[in-house]
Image (cartoon, rainbow, N blue to C red):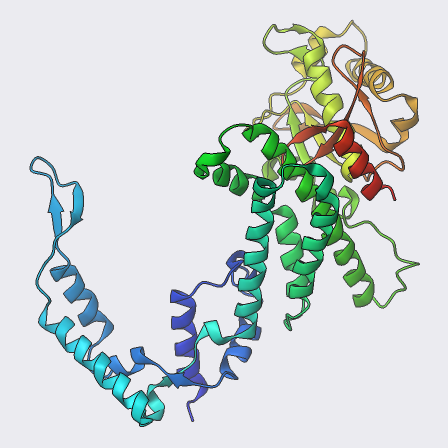
Length: 422
């Protein structure tokens, strides 16, 4: 029977060569490592070729032999590698091949010694569940390529999300399920999808629309994940779901709600954080215009439709604090703060109507000796919010994705509203 030290060594080696799916969550924080080791130590040991060869060839010997005998082909005028040479097999490599054959025969004859038995991470139930979950997520990303008609998205998104939740229900490590669902919600699957489009030569046309479709599909699935996280939270606190309907989708229940203005800037833009340089000055013309105001209105409308967020004015996309001097200098003389707030209130009334002022909080803060404006939307609006376009002639419906604001088409908005305000 192997002792814990040898099992630990085997486990560490397995972790080094076999990365868990969703490794950022599973092994990144280290908090789940003890649970993983406990599960690993309970696995039935199997013949392990590495443990047999190690009795005859050390890792250092093998690495040195590979370095000396791998061989490369170079161009005539440089050291740039073109391809590996076909070099003769080294004596050590021949020896390792013989050991492999010997060990295979030992397995067949069932005479493998106990010290050559080891465990494999891929035998762990946690590894298998995570692999299946990763596969389901991959299928989810590809769905839009196969079905561009968004009328099918609502049912599919919910079914796919529930299937992924069912897989996470098989996990036996406390807290891992919730962390995985939160990770899937926050992960930048949009970039993965865009890469998939780029690699798929048959889908070059209409890529922008397909990306929009995917954002819409992901939003629908996230709603199911959020509801599951909320339900799990009520179970953990042993409070009736009827009495505890806190909305984990909301900014006020996120980690960002407790951050200072400086910390929000350091965090950078994301689902709950957005930066704008000015409230009312179009930087292309350096004059008072509608473009800057429309950008602010779009973000706030998306926050109101998607669970809230923080908008910082006077900060660039790359986190540089430039302050509010540009806006202050464009406003008539008087109290800068008071006039800024009046301009902001006029914008909200013009774009949304006066019913939403109480959902939006505005304050000024000093960061790096410069003033910035921090606007907070705590949670989603009790009713859908439509915002007027730049010309104030028509209305648009915006939602928030991972680090962007998108406008939904009429049929997309209808489906979203139906699922978000049932």
